[in-house]
Image (tube, rainbow, N blue to C red; front, top):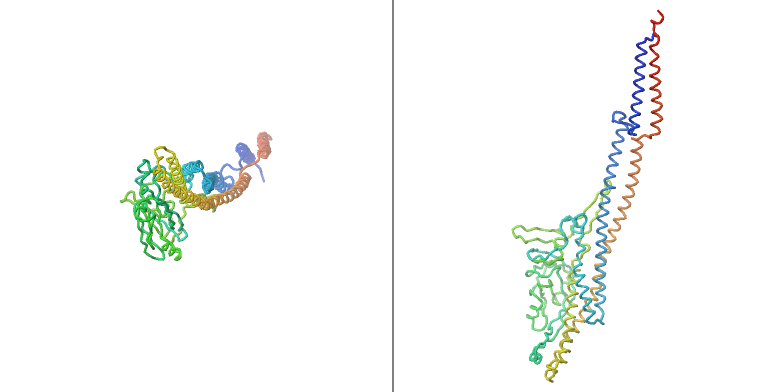
Length: 499
């Protein structure tokens, strides 16, 4: 085969260009340390790179955003639960103090002071938020758990469900002594009252200050005759002797939100293992009171033309949970929130209110005794008639004080058990948050390992080691220079040189 100069020139040009392309390719690789610059350079590497980048981006989203957000939410929740636990422990401690039968005036005042401070803190932790999202209020993260200010206009129609096991015994005291202030009042012994104790079973609503008579439905079905009074004082005034309930009937006290049962009615409800549904209307809420929509089926009827319905339980009576789920890994979610009703029991605030009222009643009753004893030493009451009358007043006051002290001791002792139940709920919630945290940490570690693995695979697929590139570049550049030198010698001789 005859090789012409043109053929040699063509082949040399092709070889030079090929070497130049290799030098350019390696130069680009040296600058970027990437194997390819465009998908067409190597479609297999390009497709694998897209898959690895997509996987890594997904892992990064979970590892760098979703998981830290979930961790912070649960950290905030755990802190709030721990604070609530400490508050309940403090309340329990005051109950232990109050259950003692050796209390003096200073002791009662100290208990009252501590409980009053704790009263303002009971549900404050329920308003804890993370990034302006309240953590205990389900889907309504832009709302607080409690009323933040006194609200006299807001009105709710609330439905509470009770079981026969919710019936509890309670003591009611009537005939409290009113201290006389003048000599004539002292000598008028007909005004001396006879303190009495009445024990009844009751069902206590979560709110006092109810507007009107409640609607009560009982299962198994039975009709209940209920007499309603605005206050305990009205009930006492309507009774001939202490607090009275007709056999088989009930009394409802609007101010305290108590449905008080006669002995026979309470016995029948227990025997039937009855379930009660109580629907009532409440207008006006105090600062710190729980918003009912987080606990009960209720309707906000503040604007009668536009009522707002809230459902906490479905038609079968099952609680409707509002779980906030974070996607923390592929096809894996984690519920990060804790529902307020699982932790901040609506009875806690009611218990604290009663503890305060009971210790205040004991303080007032014992002060009456001290006041009358002081009056016995005053010159203006030095006459025999006054002293004899004061003895009668003192006996009545001492009876009231004895009732008040005994009532305080018994209720405070029984409410230790209530605090233990509330603490059990909080501890259960803390355990739940802790177990979720452990699961999240395991997922986080797994994703961290996956992230490292995918980044390694991605680097192996896309990147080149700089030292390898330099070696290849040097070889390619040498070949390129050699091809140029060889090309320079091709045209030095031709057929014309031999003519």
